[in-house]
View (tube, one colour):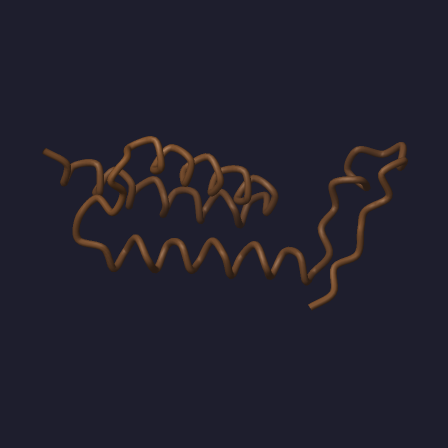
Length: 89
């Protein structure tokens, strides 16, 4: 899969942050895989709670890049994280 680099000197911020279709697909696939892993997990999968925070930050950053589609994925992720946090003693 080839990725093209955005024009770092573009005057338009939206142009600089625009994702190619292949980049959007790669992000979507990664987020969906994370969601599938969490949905299949019965209990909190991280030994260190800080690892969960890193996962949340990574997911939120990536979902923000997808706009409205990412917001829907973030809602699913947030529900799963609430469920998993509830399993902690």
